[in-house]
Image (tube, rainbow, N blue to C red; front, side, top):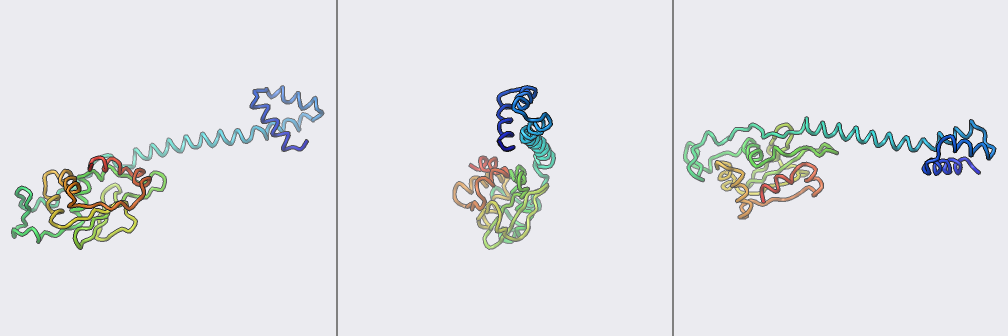
Length: 219
């Protein structure tokens, strides 16, 4: 009988709850030397030890990952001031100092503020790939892209690999941003078709970054 078969039988004996002494005695009865029998038992136990160590490693890594997740991923709303505070607001109509809403220049700060107001602070990197959440805004002919880290970073561009993209016009956006409750007006604007959302990332990626809470809040 070759060694591979002997190791296999030894594993079966161990699974059958036979003691080490019983297995050694069986080998000696068949004429095998004690030293060789010990070697066979050691090889039979090797895979079991590897599996045990692998499981322990996974448990430790999972614990560290969860600890890191709780420590490094933001769970509090960011402190982002409303960039419209310098404008006179009456109801849903926004007037600049000159009294013309069209003269309002939409800057990256507007996007970061709105994202924060409807819950983007709850998003976090993918726990496996560490890829950060990214959201595009297309407002008329203007393009913006935001990445959610330990803060919301918005730039004048479109990220072709963003998770979502919001599409609207300037009038609707200004109405939302000037409201006392931007999150609610944003939700209403989505419901009545004034804002459309393009879902770019897959469902698994969205779930891994925490978009479910935001989706539920916008329904």
